[in-house]
Each structure stands twice: as C-alpha cells, then as structure tokens.
Image (cartoon, rainbow, N blue to C red; front, side):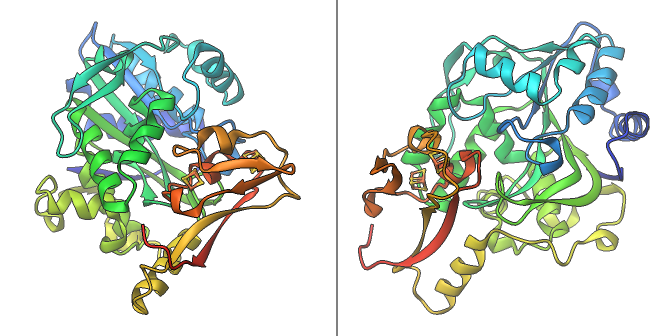
Amino acid sequence: MVGIYKCEVYDEKLLDIVIQEIFDKLRINEKIVKGMNIVLKPNLLAIRDESTATTTHHLFVKCIAKRVISLGAKCTICDSPPGKYNKKNLLKLYEKLGYLEIEKIGAILNLDTTSKLVNINGKLIKNIEIISPILNADLVVNLPKLKTHAMMNLTCSVKNLFGIIPGERKAEIHSLYSNYDSFSNAMIDISNFVKNQITIVDAIYSMEGNGPNSGSPRHTGLIIASSNQFEIDYLVTKLINLKLEDSYIVKNSIERGILTNPSSIEIVGEKLEDIIIKDFKFPDTLSKKKFARVFNLTKFVKPYPIFDSNKCIRCKLCIDRCPVNALKLINNKVVLKDKSKCIRCFCCSEHCPVYAVDIKHILTFKRK
Ligand code: SF4
Ligand code: SF4
C-alpha cells in the first residue's frame, strides 16, 4: 500500500497534520513501540540552500522526528553522503542544512562514523560495509527527496539507501558496477538489505532537469509513503511521466521479481491519474540517450562531463570524487584525461559546488 498526500508548503503546522494522517492511515504508529531505536535516513547530498531542493527539507525531517519521539522511541538521524565520512563533515552538513533545530526536540544527529562489513547476499553484491547506525536500528525510516538523476534518471526511495554505505566506499560501487543496469541492480541489492523500513518521500519541492545536484526545484506538493520502497519508486515513475524503460531501478526490480504486480498497487490518498505531471523535466542525458538509441548510435555516442573553466573555482572536489581517477588539473583547468576510463557516473557533476560541470554527448569510436 502506498499513501500519496497533498502538502503544498514546508509549514510546520501543516506538516504535523499531514504526517500524523500518514502515520495513522499507513499504521506506522503500530510499528513504532516505546524504547525502539528508530533511524531516520534523509538525503543530505551536499550543502546547498534548501530552496534548490537538493536535500530532504529539515522541517519535513523535524516533523517526522517529532512523531517518532512522541511514540516513546529513540530517534537518530543519519546519512553518509559521498566524500569523507567524518564527524567534521557531518557537523557541517547538520549546521548548514538547519538540522541542529531537530536536535533541540530530542533527536540525535549521528556522529558515529564506524561501519561493519556485512553479508547482504544480493544478486551482485555479497559483502559490503554498512554504517553502524543502520545496523543498530530497529526500524529505518527512509526519507528521500524526489529528484532526477543524470545517470539513473530518477533518484527516490531505493537510491536514497546508497547513503548507508560509508562515504568514500561509494566510489568502489560506481567503478565496479558502471553500466546503468548493473548499477541499478547494485542499488536494489543495498536497498533490499534494509528489511525493516518505511519510506516517506519529501516531494513537496522536487528536483527536475539535471539532478541530483544541478537541476531546478519543481513544486510537486506531495508526500508519498509506504513500507515498500519499490512500489513508491514505481508510482513516482508514473507520477513524473518517466517511461518505465528509462526508470532503470524500477525496470530491474520488476525483472528481478522484487516488484510484482505493480499495476495493482493499492493507493490511499490522492488518485494517481489526477496528479500525473506531464511536463516534468528530465536530465539532458536522457534525451541524448534516446536519440542515440533511435539511430542505433549507442555504441558510439556517449555522455561525458565537460568542465567550464570560467565557472570552476578549482576546489578539486570532482577530481577527488571521481571513482576511477579519470580527472586531472592541467594548466589550472579540470581535464578528463582519458575518456575510455570514464564510467559516466557523473559524480563529478553531482559534487561540483558551482555547477561548472556540464554533460555533453560526444561521438567516440572507442568501445569500452
Ligand atoms: S569523470 Fe566524472 S563521470 Fe567520468 S568517471 Fe569520473 S566522476 Fe564519473
Ligand atoms: S568540482 Fe567544480 S569547481 Fe571544483 S574543481 Fe571540479 S569543476 Fe571546478
């Protein structure tokens, strides 16, 4: 069952009302018992103004934390964004994204950066490091932001759980599973490991265009919740009018038999057919992928990052975050020194603080 509810603005009183309704209708109240260790997992991708819709809004997280605490549970907030997973970086994120306000109501902002190698027995991934707060949780409340994604086209419930892998270890997953289907399957494996979970999507303002970092905010006015993250992502795919074949994670979860009978998912709240957004903008990479597909050029036309040296502030974040070390600073300019090395994960674009990374489709005759 998936609940889709209208919530037009980030207003604390309104959020309290809608979230209470969601907790009641989806019987989340019954899953949270006094003394339980509940972990909230928002999307804290980067320090950006909340008006850009890059991260899960702090008031949205605060109101869910309030409900959890009112039920007598211990509430911890954690995420492991890409880059160095350390106390200093976490504190900076919490402070800049307004999360210190949530600490004041009794929630714990996680600063434990330990992790443990666990067997997740996935289709592709068998053993992987998972951050400690997730391993210690009685229940994980996954709080993604609805956004487009240059590589996956959509990032929502399943992809948000990539943030349970310690920061820099994500680069290994990108480099090991570098094509769209294998990366989707890796995301499904990781998400599937978190068995006891509830997902509540912040889709009040979503991100369209060149997400997950360089897109534009889009008012969608919704909160979407379920204990089945795959069902949510299927309905979100429909909601934003993305073709199933282009929603790689959803397509693969159906092919793997994890998402069965998606056309008969029970929906409470809004009727999906009344709220479909026909003109949601997708990443530029998607239209180019389609063009290449139609003209049978997929082997030769590939998207690559292009660096605008006028915008670039030489922070070297893109160089540090590239999982395959394909970038270099040459003559004070970021350069993709070897195209054949690039796995087109777009982590460089995702982390550029000044939007200096564009994605262009380039004709290449070198097959990988
Ligand atoms: S250059 Fe950018 S897109 Fe290519 S592998 Fe590195 S981070 Fe990924
Ligand atoms: S992340 Fe952006 S600003 Fe920083 S070096 Fe790379 S292109 Fe330049």
